[in-house]
Length: 85
Image (cartoon, rainbow, N blue to C red; front, top):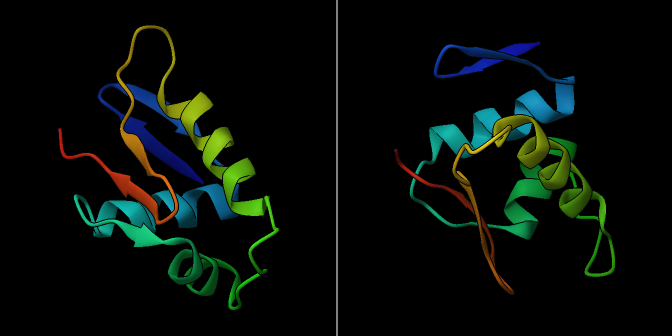
């Protein structure tokens, strides 16, 4: 699956694409960990799971090459949000 940031194409796994699409469809809205787990994987892994943080890390590496600004924001203890550009 592919997505673009500006003119740069990014190759994403299915899970990375689904996660980015979910965040993009809710730009500016903080999505809770539980709601993201449910939307992407169909269930909540529980409070000790690091799966979401791992995939957010993968996405950040792909969306923030070079000097590109961070677009995926962490809201500690709550979840994640995609920053409107």
